[in-house]
Length: 96
Image (cartoon, rainbow, N blue to C red; front, side, top):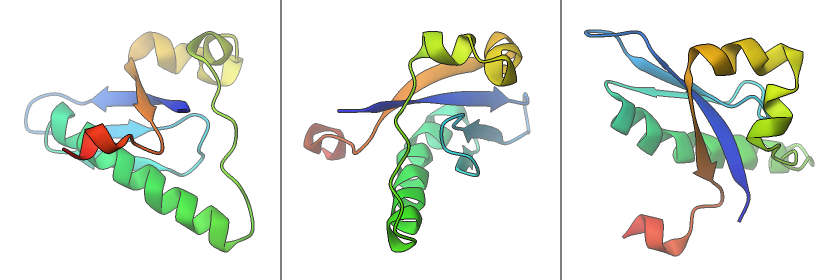
């Protein structure tokens, strides 16, 4: 299964947590805490993929963390925030 790297931006107490994907421009998610933001992240990718498919396009190939670290556009952000892998499409086990 492909895994997309997600960047988690936790602004602190009383602030929403944001999640975005360097390989999926415009695909964002969020929540009241990190757990909720990560739960919503898979749903965000699903909607993003549906939109691309409707436009006749495909999801881009996910890059590895090392590839993203080597990209000057994202290297700084990876140093400032937590990065996690989000499996997409999610396995059947994740839904249980």
